[in-house]
Length: 295
Ligand SMILES: Nc1ncnc2c1ncn2[C@@H]1O[C@H](COP(=O)(O)OP(=O)(O)OP(=O)(O)O)[C@@H](O)[C@H]1O
Ligand SMILES: [Mg+2]
Image 1 (tube, helix red, strand yellow):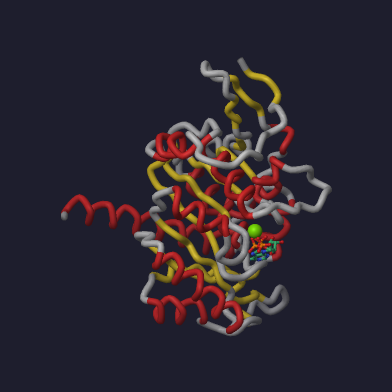
Image 2 (cartoon, rainbow, N blue to C red):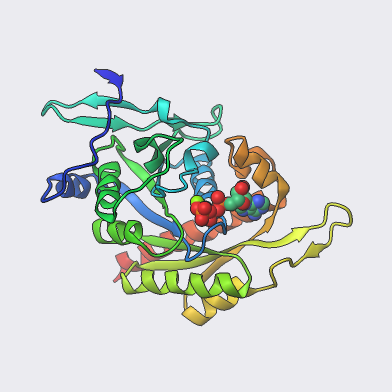
């Protein structure tokens, strides 16, 4: 039976069978990938949705969870809305949320989208204590009909706070993609996020540099607005992989404002850069798997 989603109960703390449900569900997700950064506004959500869209365009089954309660943008960037969330009553009387899906007019496999933003009224400020945030994230992992996924991508708010701690402690992440921009202040904060992921024993940690340069619309030259090569240097310093850089692209912003990731919108330099990054990432994950098998 399919009905409209009821008001979600994110209150009530304490020991919870939710943990068990998350454990069961994550066994059906082949790769669990966190997208994070120490800093705000560097393009985490843009990277997360393009990662999801590019993978789905290749035919993989993808879910994306927006774990940013204060600035949830993923749903908008993928053209889905809170009103699209349905719920199903299970045999034991519980409700499970059914994530809205988008297949971009058949361009991709349907991408399943859930967001912290679906749990709260859109136009009110959110004053949530850490414990509630933790509970809400767990519900979005354990009480959602995600089904079998090749990739579960989780987009985090800036920093290294409760959300990322909860997920790294609850899920066995396969990879963390840490997004930075090239300037020194961003690199400093990003270094902290890389280190946190290493400390949490995430098996594969890599850096992506966004807003690497601007292609001048008049002369076509590259302009290094935020400096050059910072992301690569950071990756080298921290001993992690550098997956690539994405230029500033006016179409990328336009695409996400229109609810379509740039990789499905137009074949711009940013779209090409995203596709290369995704190829690098999938090759690495596949390679790591081969290594594990070989051991
Ligand atoms: N390569 C790019 N070229 C042009 N615009 C971009 C690019 N990357 C991101 N943007 C734009 O910059 C803005 C911020 O990006 P985004 O929301 O992805 O950052 P974020 O790191 O997720 O931010 P927050 O810290 O608030 O979660 C958005 O309007 C997005 O469209
Ligand atoms: Mg974001």
